[in-house]
Amino acid sequence: MRKFEKISYEEFCKNVDGSFYANVKIPQRSTKKSAGYDFYLPYDINIPSHSKVLVYSGIKALMENDEFLMIVIRSSLGIKKNLKLSNQIGIIDSDYYNNQDNEGHIIIALDNMSDEFVTLKQGERVAQGIFLKYLTVDDDKTINENRLGGIGSTNK
Image (cartoon, rainbow, N blue to C red; front, side, top):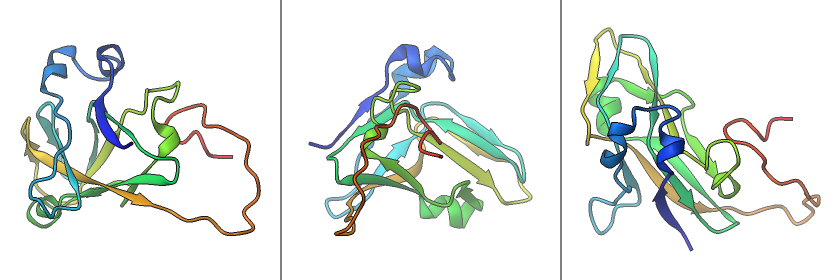
């Protein structure tokens, strides 16, 4: 099974004013042949020139164990507004879902590479999520560790 869900109101309020929770919209595809699910802004954001903001989407993703969700910038924002993802491409592992730190809250870091101040409005589409399967090598070592935390928790 794979699907998107809203994180809990309590988790959302850790980072964002709770009045925006009703604006959290489940990602959707725009056309029948779209590969990506559009992520929508639940609130307005302002990004000063040459700076970064974190977008708290209010969304988590459930997927099969051998899948991941790739997050990429919408091409129109890269081309027209010179925005990029801070990490270039976001990879959401299947075990990120419902982790103990943040419920699997998908957070999108945007960099404004332009000399202009950029404003994005609530409801605007900012990124796309694409579900993909992955393979492992035949002689992969046995891993018994489970994810315990959120972003960066698999660092050793």
